[in-house]
Length: 235
Image (cartoon, rainbow, N blue to C red):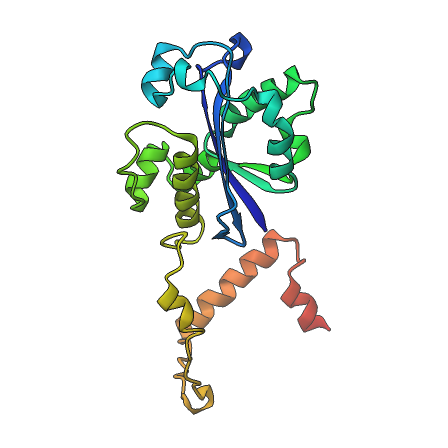
């Protein structure tokens, strides 16, 4: 199974009001193992970032001035994402920006060009109901080191999301498989002869048997005599 963990940075919060993508970061995993085949691109949005957004990501207009337009990287991005499950934290936000960029180019929506889109925020809310489920909160709860996250960055956040996702869905400690651990091979399991184990048999008392029969009678009555064991007894 090929999964792409994706994150973006933008000039603001609303693509419908002209905000644009400025950074896309993608981490590839196959069968829940990082491949190292990642994608990271900065994009010239042809507009300035909102001051609040700039405080979050720190990516200046001057830095982006010589970066390619989204039109220049669209084919590369879509080819990279094609056929994969795309995992995004708060997917509606990032997908909304990508779809807006694709619409400017007359291209179809992202969902129609990938296997599926999974929102890890929805998964986190189901796993930890009633708790904060921001990426920072999940890193703290699941003991993922995010000490380098002084500012948001698409590739860094995609990597943190991949770590968080693994721990939410299987509990694997890290994307990095320890070389010594991997070299050990499968652990040997000693065979146990279960036939040599004598299991105790506890007989029901007369009172327990009577209560059981009363319960069966109630179930049979509630089902209108359609209980399976009655049909088996009749047969």
